[in-house]
Image 1 (spheres, helix red, strand yellow):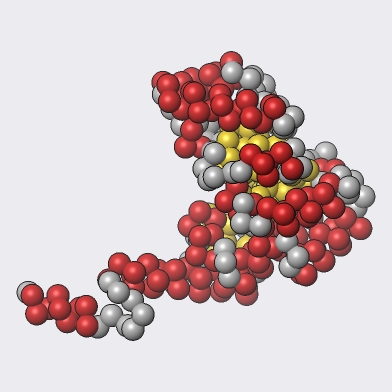
Image 2 (cartoon, rainbow, N blue to C red):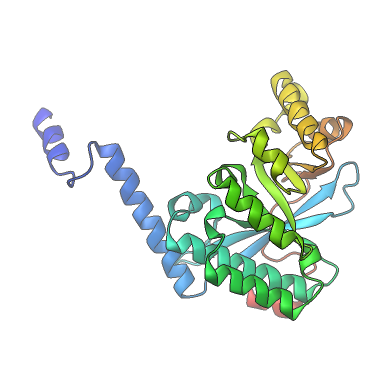
Length: 280
């Protein structure tokens, strides 16, 4: 047995110190290959999840368009399964472009819709992404004021000065910005003051079970207070229970998002028959 284990270590390729590192790298390589194949065959689509005003479950403030890819079997793969592996790669930039392209097209086809689309700060200055945005804005003058770009807190903090300038320029075109996963990272309040974020989305780790979790109640209230200090709209992510929704409404969170109000769907009711066929 000892000899077999030793041989397994000896079989690990150069550059890996242990089996776990090798396994993680092999998994990421498989994921990247799967996403690249999906992009090559245009097997990419958006799933739409509603964001509702607190206490008004029958209304939708806006939808978040979440990128999905199809694997070789046609199975829909959510972004959380692949985004970590591709975020720093060229494929990550292409995925951002495709998400934006599909989001802009959806906004053009549905003039009453407001939609948020995720992007990485790494895509700022990426020429294809910027061309996609400018084409969409030129085609429909109403798109800018209905588009929300979501940037994760960790991504924004990598290049805060670049993000500030980027947001300043695009806000002139009516585009709004959301800071996603707020509280999950280490936002510098100095930069938060300088950002032009319109919306702060409070990370789901503080929201799940909040009605019965005193620590999360304190933390979420603090995050909400910070948002209000900077005149930013608040959205609670991952709302899954009625009691959590009631608590968040009571403390003044502006909007709620999560499975309690609806799972992300690639075929929401407002899609036309033609769009439904295209997403099949």
